[in-house]
Image (cartoon, helix red, strand yellow):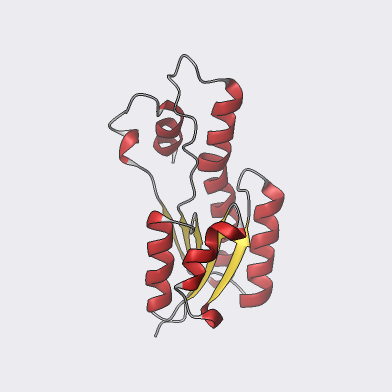
Length: 158
């Protein structure tokens, strides 16, 4: 039983959910983050109640990230592992059709959300002189798929 303090963003489905469940199975405390608490219900149902915290946080909003990390630090006294998994991929128009606003929406979550979370994690991890940050990217960064330009750019930037 390791009892690490872990934060997984984008924990409502897919890789994020599987990652959170895996860390919990190792005996770690896991903070789950998704845009809504409703989205985290399924993940939460697969974890022991005392092993997790759940946060609704829009990672495009710095104040949501600040509140989440402040709360984790207050409750757990630090963080050992950050898994930056959250991503938006909802604008799948051709590059010639993507608006500036759509680019900003994707980059603000996928790239800046990752940076904001990493900045907070480093602050907490420096205090304890240890920690790990895992930033997930995607195959689209190397193998473009039509309609995924903004997503691919955000993942390549990571």
